[in-house]
Image 1 (cartoon, rainbow, N blue to C red):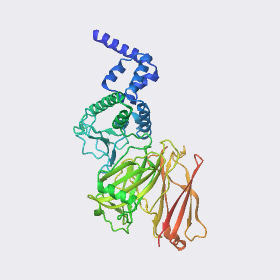
Image 2: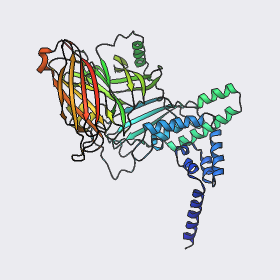
Image 3: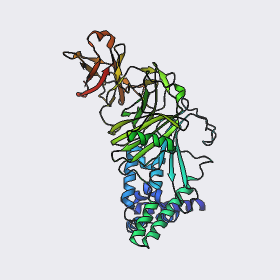
Image 4: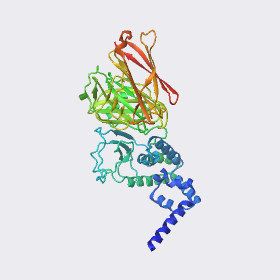
Length: 504
């Protein structure tokens, strides 16, 4: 009985303390700001009982971190909410949001897809991730250059996240090898506060220097800075940018702006090798690249094992990038060991699509869309379940080709009678020596639910033109395909177009 009375007293005291704060202040300790608190500050916050005490704590909290700390924090929270959101959880409250808010943007970020395109095996007896380490899963690694941060002996820190269930929920990979992330975060928070305290007692010049050393690169306006580790790969890209590349031969890059069946925006990029190239699958074993923003700053880099896939006598390798709205240039290449083999570039014009947005993706032209034996992970490049799209990156076809287009529809209207969209499409082909466009009249078309189930969400339209059937009027040259899509449920109309070539 005594224990119960004590328990109720503690519970009542906790409730009284919680309700003493208005929601404005109570949320401070529940939101992402808690990730920045040192252990001493966590104890102080638990002792706060009134709004006045909370306000003083918060004012002192930001003062200990410098004038720009709150603005930087809010920019990171905004970025995390926009890019790391998970079902029922704000992006800033996810594991990736936690790491971004504490450590800032990484110096380098890489991502690998599962080696096997199979669903992960779930072992109910697995106690931790060590026992399930052999399960196929997507993995993302953020690399930080910490320098001589007090309390952290390592100059470089790799933070890994895994998407074990391929459902877009990235969790910190906590293994024996990774160490205690909580201890690392605590040490970093303490070092950040201590560094500002030291800087505040020195001159303005010293303050600027110290702040620069202790402020990690964050994605307030774009994405974290990045660089390649392999100097030979970087040299190949630098020579391409300078117009001095000797290996930029007969290769192309393509990209798209898509939304996964689970509602996540992503940018797949393809490195395409046409059949006329002398490259073979054994010519390369590494796919590398750098993405620069409009100002020429490198914001994304990767170098990962890869082998050219062959389909219809053409070869390709692809990967998915995470990029916010903006204009970029992607420099991508293949290497054999430390020797770059080929390299090319592609301008990227990205507009992020929200989960609940309506509209379409740009047109993707291909002569190679097929089914794979097993379903690909969510956000795999140009893949939806077992459907694989290989964009014709050089946009060059022959009259023997089947010109296929792919377009993704974001949240089309749903007919309540069928729980599916009702769409019509009109095609128009012009260019070359055609005296007038070749039309295909407006007609009903079936849209494929990318989630595999009818209802609201992401859909795809796949249709084709048999060029051989009209080859008598097609001559080598430049052409334009126009696609008009009418959503008869929402009464929306979308007009898309894509230029291409027909080779002789």
